[in-house]
Amino acid sequence: MLTFCIHDEKNILDYRTISGVNGPLVILDHVKFPKYAEIVNLTLTNGDKRQGQVLEIEGDKAVVQVFEGTSGIDARGTRCEFTGDVMKMPVSEDMLGRVFNGSGQPQDGGPPVLPEDVLDIQGQPINPSQRDYPEEMIETGISAIDTMMSVARGQKIPLFSGAGLPHNEIAAQIVRQAGLVKKPRGGDKGVKDNSEENFCVVFGAMGVTMETSRFFRNDFIENGLFYFYI
Image (cartoon, rainbow, N blue to C red; front, side):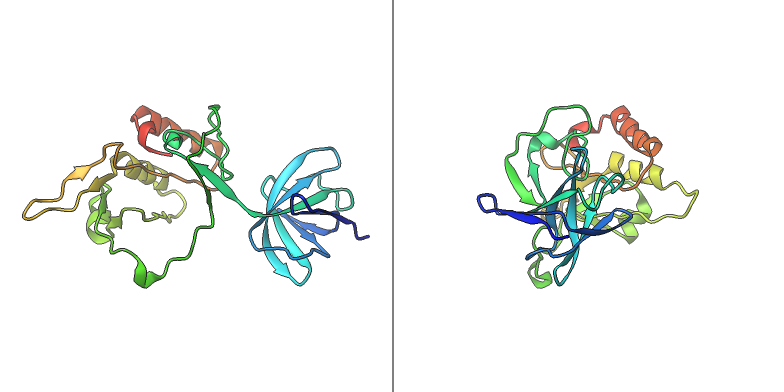
């Protein structure tokens, strides 16, 4: 059965054409002009609302990853709205010291952020030859990293570790000790500056347990780091 309707005023396409559910993914048929990374709003038969994102397109088929999972989704009755837009996140300096989920929604019981801007989380590709040369170093306080694998300002820092190794403790240590080393002038040495006006840490975790999440939050609170991290 093919069922869809068009809301011209919102540029939203409404479908009830789910042909399969596999783990966190739903597959929809007969989708008109889907876009990669497009946000899809799902309304279940019981009224629950979930959100997903287009991961793959093949012809008129679209594979959508549902952020909240697919449990309870009825292939015939679930309504899927293709919004025509990608995920965007409100940003503001008020985000400092706050905790958010992957969709940018506060998870610390605080009020919503009043955005200074709303940005596409996909970002824009940068021509490697046009990138600014990295001149601002982040000092982590761990000599092996600072001397052998120096970190530049704005760089992502992935940590890869085997089972039983203290990767959580190392990540927390980097956040505690990280500071910006100013570019030296003349014969002056670099000066570490981790004041809140010039520096912040964006700390992200995926697939961690509640115990691990509490470990990081407690560590940041105990060390007074909430004012310059997200």
